[in-house]
Length: 412
Ligand code: SF4
Image (cartoon, rainbow, N blue to C red; front, side, top):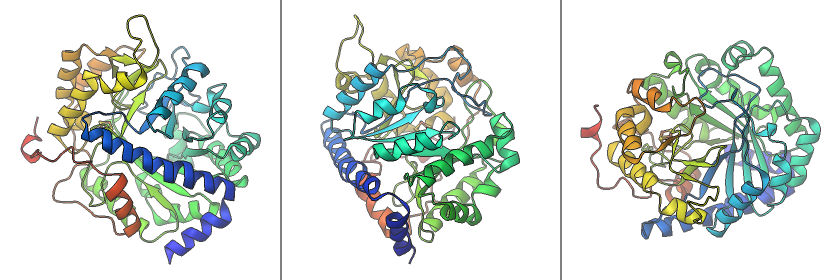
């Protein structure tokens, strides 16, 4: 029943041309890009099919616990460098790009750049506040963009978490603008102590469905950066509750729900450890993932390094060792569980601190080990067969954890 409702919503509530772009670019070609990744893995080569690119460090908000240097001097990835990155990734079969920040809509050329790649699909992680009616209209016209707007709590919590008054209503206005123009739009939330009871609820999902939102993505707050807020972290029980909620709602509500941390059988995984995704920062540094702010390679060509993007990824010893260490340590998040091992790895490779503040290593040193999505014995398999099937083929651990017993290696 919910599947029929979902199909009806997709057909009636989004622009058909956008739906076709989504199905073709993201669905069909995205699937092929993962198949290519699987073939590369068999040859021992890792080039992530899903690249996340932080195109700017600046942001108009000051969210609690943000690890990006949003108040530092503005740094953007210039249009030509971004075009080059996308072109080179395309030669590897990539079609999907996650556009992150900072606030991506502060990048002066964002949509113009995306317009030049109609054969790709872009997901923009945004606070939504710069999405005016004309911006949404432009996204509709482009068709290869989905905004993912972050809502971090109800009116009160949102303003407190995001460091400004009126954040909730401004983000909601941006969201409404997207929906008014029938853009395929998602809402994401970084779950933490102050929003889990409001947003991890059927009421909230129903409200999103009523508004016309097509997908939701629940992240879990991770205490990183110079002003980490460990008191906001979810307890292991709450993390399990979040997983259970997602699985149940996927089999019940006509809204898509994304997650990046479990396979179809409910076993935890780390997308950086599987190599399905890595991150590029606004300075062009290649990082294992957005919260691991250390780098050895840059997308920018220099006299010292004129290799292709492919070679930079495939030959990176830092990335390779990061994945091997993460795989051998846990199916969950190595940063949360074993910051000490990550620090050793960074030191061994002499990886550069990619932050402006220059304190990333010291932050890692004082991090308290915590539990992550890995919760052996408590796996909750997908109930919705569509998710189960899709994950079986295109989103799983790709066998990278096969010969490790992780349970013995969990205590620092
Ligand atoms: S290292 Fe942790 S935060 Fe980074 S991708 Fe893996 S699980 Fe996510």
